[in-house]
Image (tube, rainbow, N blue to C red; front, top):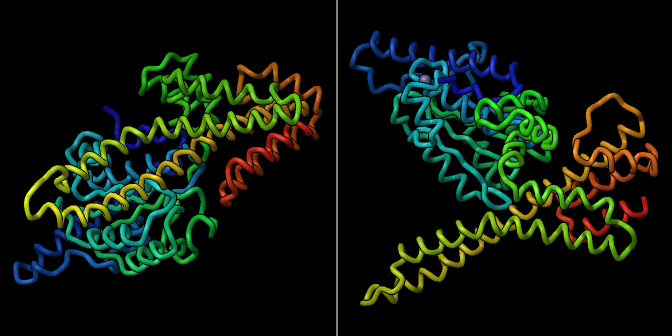
Length: 417
Ligand SMILES: [Zn+2]
């Protein structure tokens, strides 16, 4: 059985740093326990350690930010570090109850916040901060992992900042964000956190983990790792899910379908509709389950004196749920569209590197011939312009331009060159 950091692919430096910090955190706990014993029962009610007792030079810090491109393993790193903090050996051995419960998402002292909508709201954050201040039931640390901390609203960010500025002695915040750019994370939060930068893992490392962990055949793993451009989760999906492969093929067919203005608009529609369909498939099931659960909790179908009053409150709660679900659906659509754009960018990047005769392997080996033909037709300059059109589309959608408008503009640019 391997330890908790085993699946953090191609991030050797970060793993060294996190191991050191986990060991330092275990030392803090031991020192706290020793101080309690030395002081005797009279002061046993005193906190075992204060923020001052955690000297940054020992390697332990109360707030961390994991940065890196999507798929580089930000949340994998945060979860592994959380496990190492709960590990009874302080190492992240992967075998003790602390490691097991954290990796299995059942540890009572570890909370993973996974934003479902476009942003994490202030109410959610306040409740979280409040619970994070309680004494860890396992006697070690309260760990709060916030995935996609770049999706915090400003008010939620402020609520979090307060907690980070005056951390309860046994609470650790682990934030994940694409970068430490002020657009992703506020400067004040950033200044209170230690940053662990993750890099895009090399395709060979991604392929290796697909073979070892998921039992995928080596040749399939290599193809999927290259096609996913260092995104570990995406590589696994491509290797295993025929639907995901089909969607990717449809996206990579776009360049040769762009034969005119009408075709460009058709391609835009097809791309948007494919993203909508993919998103709907991913959220419909949980939407239905959630609604049924809420209706049951609210006593739908119930009769008697309480039922009428409950029904009035129920309308509000159902509305709230619908709002949340709509926000989640929008997010899922954008994520699906973004994956398609990344695939498309890979194609034009291949054309560019071929036009430049750069000695690098293509992203999409299966469309390399097509990219080569494009390189001859467009030359380096035309390939670069098309690559930039795809990247500009991503940036526009991120900046809240309506996806259909951004994609139509991109398709026209790809056609005209
Ligand atoms: Zn352990």
